[in-house]
Length: 386
Image 1 (cartoon, rainbow, N blue to C red):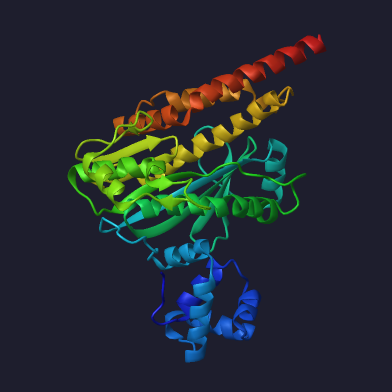
Image 2: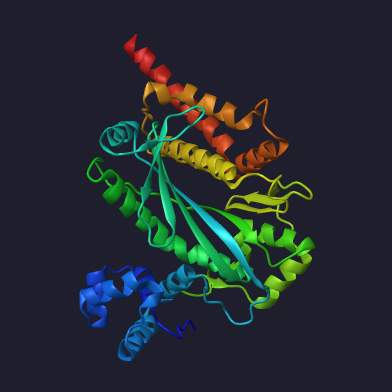
């Protein structure tokens, strides 16, 4: 049960955001004036509501849904934990990647009317802009080929691995509709012909402050990369954490899972990739991979995954996939080569990381299939033209 000993403007703002309410709606929910809520939030920790309002805020929190309480606690850095948690507190930075296909024409229109900032990239035009998010920082990466990837960063302080796993599954239910609303309503704002629907969220977790050492640290990172083993997704209306003794056993004894690919370097880092995402911890920060390099690789991979998914969907719907010539099969062949082939000045750590991401994501196979589909469409078009 999450409780607040003393409400200030900081906790008030966190609760309003967790409830997904505007200032007007939140004021009506509490039965106060809008300017009262604005005054609380503007004052942050220096403003303390009157005793009767403290009680009203307690009631609002007590009546909030489990998901809203989880969002509230995460924002304040003390997520609610199930009873019997095992490990000490740890800090992790969550990176969520949410891609969606817009189309090259829409991406071009967006670049011409929106204040996007060009971002350096080795082989493709890409621009970025900030997206408003009450629960962290979010950047939209808009690729010229017609894919946008939202990169949402949230700092978490947690106890026990199952709490992170359940937070992940529960938050995904809100992330997809939120991302669709931000892309269609905020980013595109009428530029798209139809609503954009992201299909999935992929996560990367960077462990910044560990509660484990030795073999338990290695097992913890492995579990973070494959959180499904810590969640009972069929026991109730929403995912529930596994029993405490299961987490303890997995941390102590470890587990074998072929779908998890290591890419850490002994004494430098611990890293694992899986279908569910990445987990990484720098043992020696000055020698480990920079987080920005991990992020850049994952954003490119998710962009290409979404692009290939659009082509796959057209094929499955018995349509010939029609893509702009500059983003046809040769574009995908070049992208595959850049991701799969080591660069001359690239470190061994970078090579291991990219290979682990490619193998666990299944992107290589999708790129091959997408190239074949586009080649067939191009050949058919050439025969018709002749």
